[in-house]
Length: 235
Ligand SMILES: [Zn+2]
Image 1 (tube, rainbow, N blue to C red):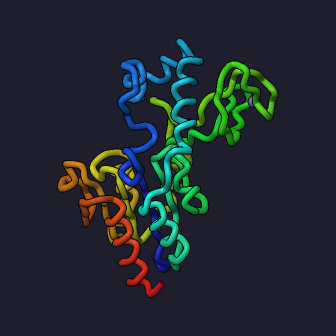
Image 2 (cartoon, helix red, strand yellow; image 1 turned 30 degrees about the vertical axis):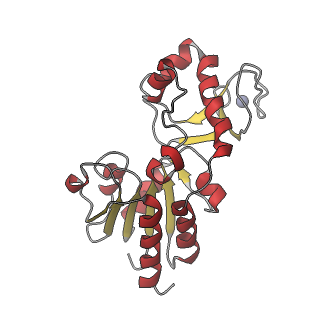
């Protein structure tokens, strides 16, 4: 821990309208069941086109969302932080990228990527997916699925995340409950002397293992926190 290394985990609490995968008024009962995630793998096996349609609609809606003040504050932190910086997000949108974050890890995948179930290549994908979608790598039709982690599938890049957590001096969980996974699991890897802080408005944070808990609007809480961190490090 000679250098100040920081790991930041973000969740839907920093997103507008609760995030792109939040339920909204137009969702049918079937779509609401899909949002529970447990049902996704079976629904995809039974009716892949219908499941693709569900994600196509959300992918299209991404363009309506804008990065928040919290996203922008994290760009300032990354740019000015004097040590190692790793941003991990549980969100599947591209708001960190659009704000200007360099290379966030998407723990649960990305709506704007498609994975071929035939050759396993992952491709940037902004269009709808259906049976006519062709894999740019192997040219197979209809075998592209959203590059998302569905129920029962392992989160992405966990080795790299574990390694960063194990040598960090500060772990921040922002807009995600500290007492639940993934934040609670990440906390187990953090060295005992590292600073740990959670920004979350949900109940149950008192019982989480984080040293500090801040509740309030994510935009102002994250902006204030970033200003404090940079002032403390003379940046
Ligand atoms: Zn392929």
